[in-house]
Length: 274
Image (cartoon, rainbow, N blue to C red; front, side, top):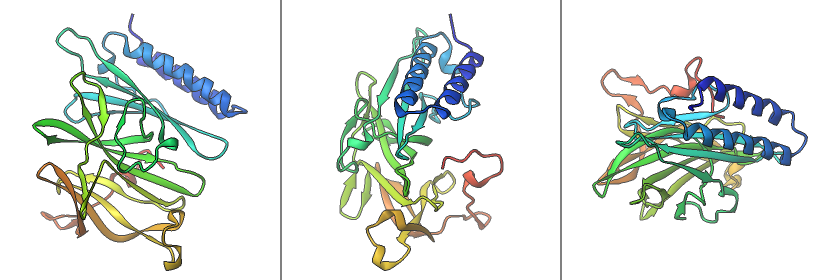
């Protein structure tokens, strides 16, 4: 028997209410484990892939533009003002109507040198995804993911990383597709002040991943990323020959009408990620 969106809505709202009033991190984790079981049951039910959960508060449900998969994510705030992250990746049904899914296990707090680290679904660098960009790599479709991570009480992070699938349709995060200077990275991490708003968005018309350049509030604070602020200078990653190559000092405008690019997250009624 399938699980309705109404049932999922009720389950998640119940979890969220309990989590907000939990007295300890252990309680919060227990409530989130209950939600994990509910999501697993949901994805095992017929027709679940075509049942979006995007209207449920505090849960992200994002489909790839080619409708090949979806990613359901949420986080739990902890007493030390860090977060734990949860993610389920569900593939589109096959010819028999069966839909394969994977749970990604958050390990971002234990990942050293994350920009060069090859990761699998059991070593996921946890974040809340808000954009998926398909592109071709080695004649197969890979995906750039844009995510937000509430690092600690001093700084936030936004993340670019590449998702691909192996022969068993298992997710991998191991392609070095982001090029800046002489170096290629598996993911790009932007860390900035908790008080700042940093834009990282894909501009469909310009085919660029556009972002504010980050600089320390004062020269002597260089390297202390909790003091980094976005500037009015924009850089971007642009796809060239199956790699995303950084371009400096881009003009993030629609060249057809000369209008300044407006970050979609600033539109009215658009839920904020951070």
